[in-house]
Length: 282
Length: 266
Image (cartoon, rainbow over all chains, first blue to last red; front, side):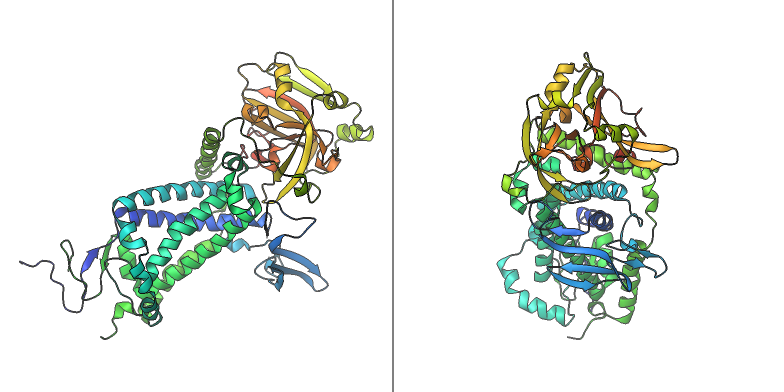
């Protein structure tokens, strides 16, 4: 009874790794990003093209992405043009649904909220979750500065950069270290999301608001125009979706139950050999 | 060191995780959030409060007189893209159009001390203002054009807006939607901040030409810090009111009645 933190052989200690702020903001963000993505695709469907600059070129060409449906002798086809390269995307982008009842939308109904065309509703839901997302961001930054989460886990130090090659090898061979704080690749990934992608997606969103353009005209200069900001907003979305996919794959690879437990209860089973400190459980 | 079960993808872990990941994809693939499209839904009403928050925050942040960005002549690289109604078919409008709007009158009515009426010639003889601004459609596209007209603020001053007035309602000629029970005419409204904003124009000129029918002839309102649907075309009457509930479906505009944000600055 004298040593309550003794760890059974072959198992690491159970450590309290995620604070209540980390856990709650994590799940609120998960919900926000789900709705923001699917309503964002609904909003994009209202004008499925992206441009560079201040305005959309209708009589000149400054588009970098266009998704559309076109009539051909063989019937309607979906076409996606990205940086001048055109692809047939019938069935997914431009034309989706069944052959009997084709749907002529950029992104298919399966990935939009609402499933039918409704820009007004898409915007209502998008802006609601945008406010929730930003509010959650403020809570996370404040709490994580105070409780040391940012310093301990997120900030990328020179030693982390030096540790990247080894961490890449470990990930490639599916050897995961379950430590008290995050590894080099985790830090780089989370640092990029919190300090680059999250601020970018909020600021580019604000740059699309004509009201905010009047309030903070520097936003237009920062991103090189409203239409460029819209394009960057979309690009950051693609990066966040990529992060989500990798995040899920890593959770699956690293032990989904342990990872999920840590994001629900805060308690995380560390690797064997992790030094115990006071407060750990066996 | 031997591989530990928790550190590699075992079949059991993979299946467990796949079910979790898959369930979220199934959620996306269905139409379970379509109920939010109903204007009567309570959850939607809660979410719509985010637009009220946006309005209040932007009003506090921007300042009543702060201008929308203006652009250089060289930025006008194309015609102003028309959208929505482009050729109204109401009898009143087609009659006016046939005689080149000679008998057109713009009226200012409602909560004013002095109701007013202007012909197109009178409007054109008032102090004119031109501005090259960016038109942002709610759909996502933008177009830069030069708008010429007379500022609305001084006209409201001439009409002497009564202290209780809170909104300007903009009545239009165009039948934006034709239904079995008749035409629905376009209307919009703004608060008095937008109505009095120094760039808010009764615009009769576009890119140094007479405003074309497709862009709202003879007079279109410009509220430059808001989206395109807040720039009503084919304008004939400005009505000062303290309440929007008696117009259309009560949300303050044709598109707001269909579920769009009333403020439109975002």
